[in-house]
Image (cartoon, rainbow, N blue to C red; front, side, top):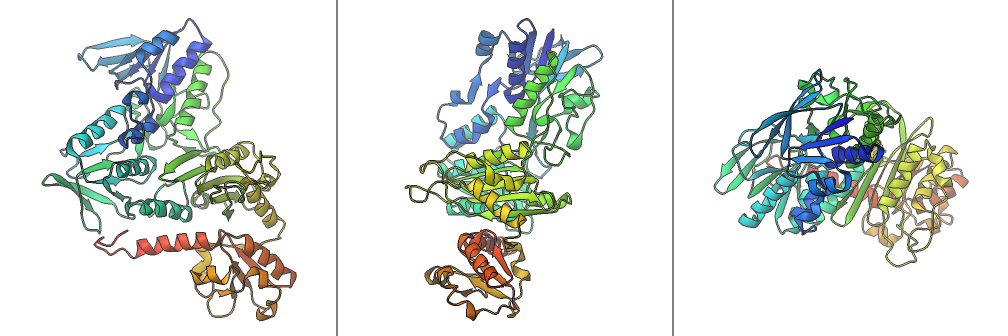
Length: 565
């Protein structure tokens, strides 16, 4: 059997190695148009910022090491320029000498990945100070430009994973960064309320955010670049990084007559087989099923690409493997923060017509009495009628990745949201609490299910009457209250509530708040015991203040953009 693989990196290299492990005698040939067969794509921003110092660390395998270990023939700087499914051949161009030739195959794997989304904007093509970041070669170009020109300012266009990571790493190089994003938030996997914590961390590290600000073009300004913005004053910088997103690189598949899916992606079945039975496709170029919703989607992440490559290899070698979809679990470092998500967010659930509910809590990363405990904010989303887990978002410092992985596993296992309370998780004071944050989320959901607690949320704040028809109660200490509180809230500390219960009107609903949601929950139970109709605020004042502050900063931006945060 002869297998030709178009593209290396996560998908192609993984598939090749798996085929070899399953079939010692298969002839395996990889064509990769870049100069690198397998590289750490996710590590590229960290090389720019100097966290990864040696460029060789970015290269996971070389053609020589691949052949030595697996007897796989790797051809870098070779671009496949055509596929002929009828004759089962590919046309290849050697990019070093221009020679073109054809190669036959019995089975073909397309792992062409995605390419940067480059909008059709004026002034883009001719400007050598505007870069995209997708390949090792892109990284070297940026690194070389910085080394030779010592830029003092940069504009990063796009607030997704690459944009945020690049902004951080350029800032660590001492470059003044403006991050421009057309949407009203960074990091689309997160809901707008949780994204406020990310915005705060970026601003704290002197990243200027220009949200809800589309880019309209670019123009030369001496040795600099003018970034032309819609409804905003132009921003001038020494360099620009475009990180607007990626699109499937599916042109070969299209020209070969293979069936395409959403947004021009390659359509595959759960065996990773295309519309041609002898051609498979994996990675960022293919459409897959969302594990939560069952809908077709695109997920440009290394984890799913590796799994798909293994499944394609299995099926080529006669095994019966199936890809059941992705829940797009991800994690990102943002300066001192870690932000992670899995499943769908609340916004997506709403758009799909799924009636959802959520809990928001702020537990410590480990036992509070053990030194070094850090706060995290968790948002767990579930279907209202069935309590099916839909997704989670966690932002904090330590232990974020651990908790998101536990919830991701619970989602994959079909565990109902209240059952998070039952998980038997490892505990020692340096690592967790006897009630792990994941358990705590389960406890709150369990209380909601059993009608022990009712919640209210930050998005309801403006609709809550401030005319005296409801009681707004802050149960923190007077000192905490004096440092900031929500409009219209009176202060009765939770420990004094029983003695001062007569100050409250039992005929009015009571909306309760504290710093994190714990004391207000206790207050809600006290009030319920005295016959009050109570609602506990999800997330606490710290969360409330972050969301409100972030919105105020954005809304305070002037039309010209001069005071935009």
